[in-house]
Amino acid sequence: MVYYGHESSFKAISYDGPFGNPPEKLSESRIYYKKILGES
Image 1 (tube, rainbow, N blue to C red):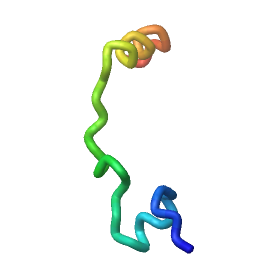
Image 2: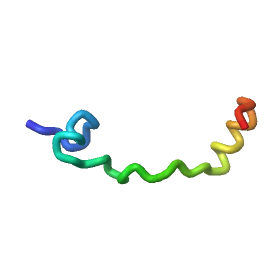
Image 3: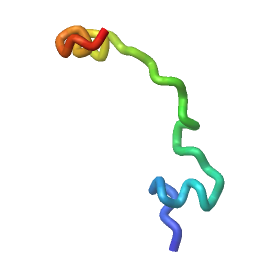
Image 4: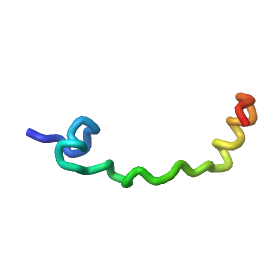
């Protein structure tokens, strides 16, 4: 049995994930938390 939603099977079926690995998008909340954590 192959579970298509699991990362370990992505390579076996040459599938790079449900979203095709989009570039990371910084939402307002992520920017806010980065400021709090001091990693600008």
